[in-house]
Image 1 (cartoon, helix red, strand yellow):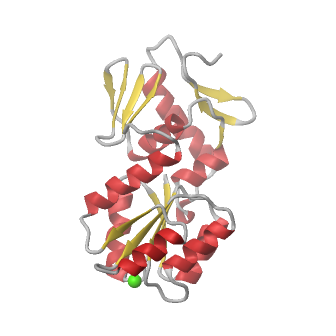
Image 2 (cartoon, rainbow, N blue to C red):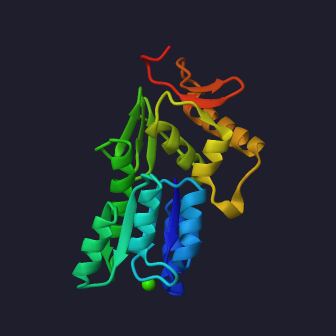
Amino acid sequence: MRVLLVEDEPKMLGALRQGLEESHYAVDAADNGIDGLHWALNFSYDLLILDVMLPGMDGCALCAEVRRRHITTPVLMLTARDAIDDRVRGLDSGADDYLTKPFAFRELLARVRALTRRETMQKSPVLVVGDLTLDTLTRRAQRAGVTIDLSTREYALLELLMRHPNQVFTRAVIAEHLWNYDAAPDSNVIDVYIRFLRRKIDDGHEEKILRTVRGTGYQLVTPDHD
Ligand code: CA
């Protein structure tokens, strides 16, 4: 999943970026509101994390502008302690949740998971497609009860496909969700990861669930799909 992080405090930005990347998220970062708005309007994200106090344009104004352009991506605001006005303004500007500084990184991760889950109407942290399960909390994948070891990128790819079963993903859309701007891959790189993933989840199983849709892309199919 791809996250836009807008935070002007360099240490905070660096720590959050590193933590999110270690947790398998692709991250684009901006240190001011103007650049943040540019990123938010021109690229597609699974989540926006916005500090409230930002140079150029504050996080609430940024959020309001994003919503005015009909972008419905979940927004998590980072607010200062005791700044009730900021929290109210953030929620009123269209943010979905807020986190008060200072916070524990694992709380941020929990809120990120909850917000991205809400987007796909999934209440459980365990994604299920047929006999394949993916626990987004422990990051453990299993097919028919057998644990599958996944690399960071394979995990992110599987999570994306499992959140939207039967949906056909083009290589471009997969790239957009899994890589940040600086690391955008060639489309043949996507094919390579699909091949790795297919080997891990489909080899040895009669029912092949990771399908190639010729000329379009890839999909993960549910048992009732023909
Ligand atoms: Ca700030």
